[in-house]
Image (cartoon, rainbow, N blue to C red; front, side):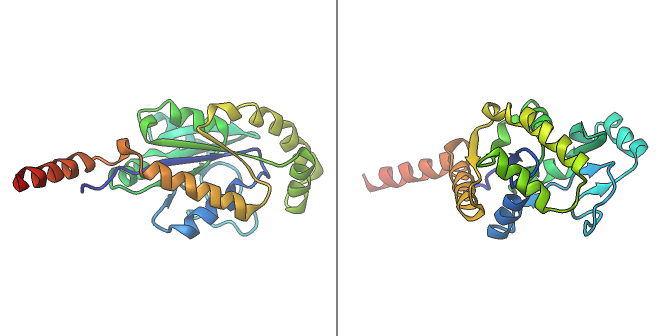
Length: 213
């Protein structure tokens, strides 16, 4: 059968709900999934590698990419720009590879409204409670109290968009949620509409029936 077209798997959540950990778990399960490396104007955090975690670029370079139509989606988050370069995404899905996006609701909305919308599987991750969300943010020990307060304020706005997604998972524990996430990807890959080779396969079965007559 012909190779299926790749999926665009969107993971969104308020900061601290676990989408980055779930994205890593999904790729560990299937390393053929391509991680969409976003471009951003924010400074790199300790341990982050340019080209692996993000493409760290200047504001001028980022705006030039927008003007040149090189971004599938982009947004401003906490005064910094984030976006997904479109070229690698289109090449991957046309080659039958799934592309994973770890982005906020703004970026997810832009992709769902783009010309690639039929390839999208969108998943929103909720925290088990707001108290747990606050605890997870503080356990990172990467942000100041002021930044954490801003992220918590933004979380309410992020969560308000939960019903725009195809699937919603409550991340009570990473292992259980990762299992649910894998199940979604498997089911979406098996959808009839995503398997163009099935028509030829069924025609072949019918030919076999006719040859037996």
